[in-house]
Image 1 (cartoon, rainbow, N blue to C red):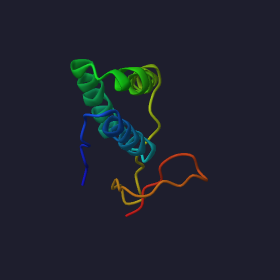
Image 2 (image 1 turned 60 degrees about the vertical axis):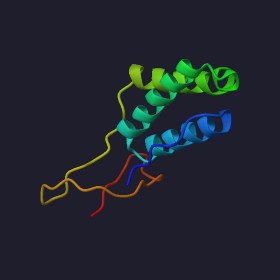
Image 3 (image 1 turned 135 degrees about the vertical axis):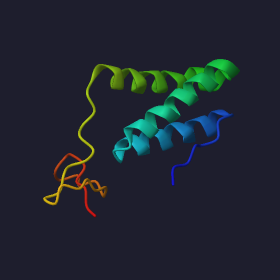
Image 4 (image 1 turned 90 degrees about the vertical axis):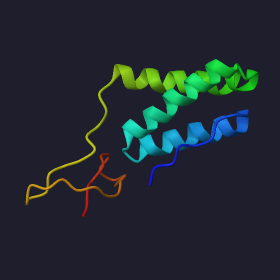
Length: 99
């Protein structure tokens, strides 16, 4: 189940940023980018000063990084031809999918 974190104070916004990065690191780039985009829009609309100063630059930098590079593959086809989802294997450097 995907969780959309709460936004608000600098602490909540920092936690939301960490949730987004965790989704990205686990291979769910779409969800991570969605959270980052919502977080960026929230910080810009509220103008919460600490978040503008400390969180927004990290959010913008991360979003920019995904606009300038191609994300790594997040799935592969098993011998049977079905796509499966599974755990990240840091020894390989890409997401390996297991059923």
